[in-house]
Image 1 (cartoon, rainbow, N blue to C red):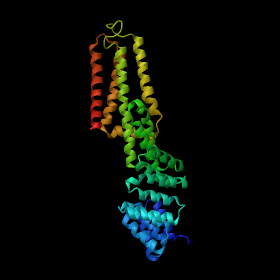
Image 2 (cartoon, one colour; image 1 turned 60 degrees about the vertical axis):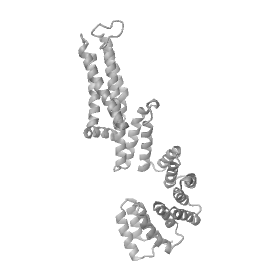
Image 3 (cartoon, rainbow, N blue to C red; image 1 turned 135 degrees about the vertical axis):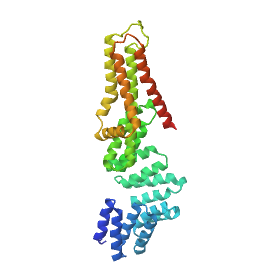
Image 4 (cartoon, rainbow, N blue to C red; image 1 turned 120 degrees about the horizontal axis):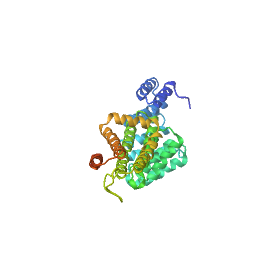
Length: 362
């Protein structure tokens, strides 16, 4: 087989850079010069497929097959185009044709998996075809991508997650797979609290930041990172409220203990409370945020600047912590003022948390 024409090679390079309009222009020029260039027609079809112009894919592959009826890539791309155009019978016929031409091609089984996806009762066969493609090409991103899709259609979350991990094994900088992994970590972090979900939020934020580093223009990844950081910031209010409770107990804001009326509270007890409050913030927030990558920290400050509700959350956390420090450090001789401070810190914050959760549920 002769080498591809330089214009076709240039078009392929432009497609790698996702400059599809320029690639189409070069290919149109080449095909005007030589309408019998099969590789030119196949490359043009792939260019149309990349931008989801499925009718144009059929036109270009039709020209290629008129010149070379056994052209594997043309049949392969027609499978996808016909599937997307709602012509499942023809798509399946094209998939079988790819396997007839080359029974040992993993791409043929990927095409078969795609074509079978048009029939819900045959979705188990979709998974089998994709699994066959993976067995034939265990180091192919395309094969594992097909298995990911098949697992999704069959409700096999284990297959979906394993496929993403395999793609990252093959291509650690694959932006799509990094985004999928971040979504999986975020889904784990959204599990019920008893499973320790809150402790996984930093991992979710870090995964989104890693994916964004690979694809900085991905708006969905940016939103995912913002959501993870926002949920982490929401958790700081509970740390602050815990400090308020610790301070109230240490300063005897409410009558408790063997000598409930004695004020001020013992200095040693109040100093110990300050140490506990520092430990709460140290283990609950500072250690966690300090170890985060710069992208997560940048997102945090960006959210604080852009979103008023985030500023409210940060303000409430700071206000509750400051109130706790004031309650525990001042040697109160009367309970009225520290009690007022306690309720002013506690009630508005809890009301905000309740309102926020109600808004999220609705």
